Image 1 (cartoon, rainbow, N blue to C red):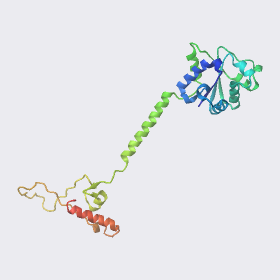
Image 2 (tube, rainbow, N blue to C red; image 1 turned 120 degrees about the horizontal axis):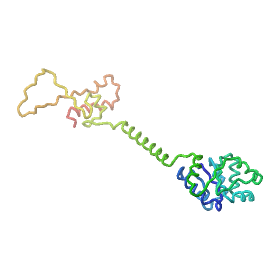
Image 3 (cartoon, rainbow, N blue to C red; image 1 turned 60 degrees about the vertical axis):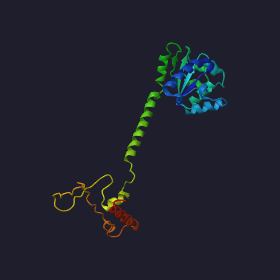
Image 4 (tube, rainbow, N blue to C red; image 1 turned 45 degrees about the vertical axis):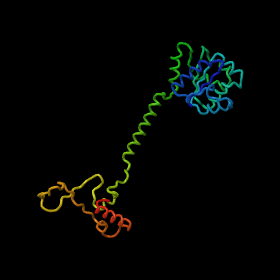
Length: 257
């Protein structure tokens, strides 16, 4: 919560409602505090105001025709206490003069409110000049536009999705199996990896031998399978690994069944 609006409901309630509504469109609901919408029924009013003032960055003091009489004559006036608290905590205050009012004389104000007279105030009308006056006020209230915040959130989501797809593509795939033999054991036996066929021509003359009638014109060259002692001549492999290799070699010799 960034902006706290201080006002008297029966004095400047309608124009304060318009200001709060426009600020919410510009900055978001959670960035604007007006007691009428933010304090729930049954809550401690004084405590809620104190907590809100402690969290805000600035206070818009809406000063109407009846403001001076109420803050001067009533020490318990809530608006008076809000502004005194803001001054004590050195919170930025933006005075808005509504309905052609002017500051009262310094001697008439309570001593704790006299620092307000040193602040530059702006006049604010609720008529045809409302939009122009609001734009002037909004320049002193920095906040991200809702559309900008939405675009930033969408950009972060797209980046996170792209990163997830990228790492998913680069993640290791499950171990492949060829003829019931895992890839790791197949590599140790000298077998081609799954999905790849390696043709080794038989030793001998390069001229093709005549093919008997009725037989296939293509023949599958024999695959040389290394035994466990050739893969591990020093006997460093575990007994279970050697048994797996021997079993795989037998399967290959029987056609992979």
